[in-house]
Image (cartoon, rainbow over all chains, first blue to last red; front, side):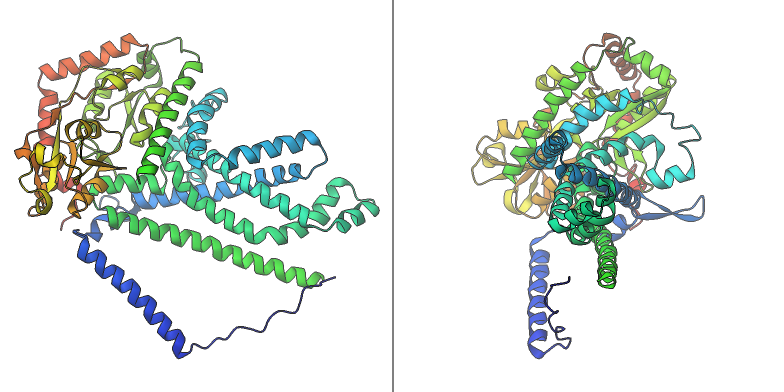
Length: 304
Length: 276
């Protein structure tokens, strides 16, 4: 069944003199840029002022507490977490509809994908936020949510969604982001489903599986393994795209960074630090997905 | 950069149109804004970070002239205050989409803005000042800066940009997302001067003496009128806010607070900066 060619021999693990020369050249290039920047840039570097906005020592309580930038990072992580789940769910359903027999469902999902993929994210976010969200949220009573009720004002809620007072703000940003990213996930899921050979569908039908069971037990597991790498890429894009929703004043990392930069006038320290935070977050996600992929690959080999 | 700026300007305009539409579609509430605020027990104020109008102290709390004004306003109304930090380019659409009750954000009254929102009587009058790079434009005059090889910077969407375009029709105007970037371009020597509302240019010159100076001897290019911005169609709220400003102007409270925040940084610098 596995018709793939044998894997190529393992790449060399030892560095030669030529490799070191290459490293040296790259380091030299970076050094040159840093030197040039320092020569041109008239700037008074002051890192401690910005570090103070990551975390500060609260003398009244006698402990370290998160300041704006760390709070922003936590909001971005929450957005990434819920956004990934929501976008995956929408993408899965829409992707399945894209390959479904019903013409109506195919038209709906196709329209959704084309509409969102052909509008710049910024425009979509503005339209969604000012037009759609401001109609939907009051209609379902979210605007008047009581932030003091025990359902909302508890530790679990705070960990999951942050400050209850900012919940609607967070939610509109989250839905915006998820709807946007889900359009791309839809296409990935569709490609995954369609990449499963026809024979698998026919065999499934021949042994009398119900359509649900066919999808759940035969098609999706095979599709998932194939789409894991592009899916991981899309989820990491989601984290990076979350910076755009700072435009609608969602209090995430990029928005709070602009506030810190404006208050302290330490623009470069702030953005370098924030860049580092995004890098760490995305790299962590990439690492988790690489492990998942390896695990999926292992189970695939065990099955064959 | 210029292309992106154009796109963003177009977007802001689109958002404005969409926001206006949303506000028009939404059913007009039976009660006025003042009743809504009293019932909610909370005044929601839209603002944007802008030294020394509103900024973050070391603890991440909001401080500044505007924060004092809005806090006293809420106190006098007998309600709580909630600040809604908002990106400046989307602040009017956000007001129209009812994300908050009023903008107290150092917003200058302009006829164009006034077509979309209502303004109260001004609660501050700040001049637009310029700071210039000493190497490129020491002792600059309005004539010497009005040249095609001069670059001037401003924060996108503020009145200063319009003033630059009018006063220096030949110069290249570069617009940035916030003041700090606009100012850094001047410090780096990529631009000759930057416009901002007083007293920021003076603060910058103070912090970077020897590299930057306040242009034209500190004479402002224009004097603005900053008012609260409200959604259209509520005369009662407009009357209340305007008269609140009137009262606090006559009793000297506004002038005293303005003096505290705008005179110089020494009065409050230890609230924002760590010991250095």
